[in-house]
Amino acid sequence: MLVLTQKEGEILQVGDDVRIYIKRIRGNWVRLCIDAPREIELKRIPAPSKREERAQDNSRSFVRLRKRS
Image (cartoon, rainbow, N blue to C red):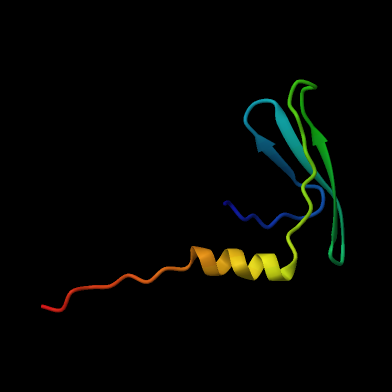
């Protein structure tokens, strides 16, 4: 996953055909405008709850063990 920090008025270009405009940032809300061809399907997926987020983080954690010489 790529995490970006953007400011109001900036544009993200995805491939050749998709642009995401950062229109407004107010507190925890961000207003986006997406310019994409009609044949590209866009889906809105709800954010996971804090409990789901923690469970997902725990499932990603791992420990590397090294043999002692």
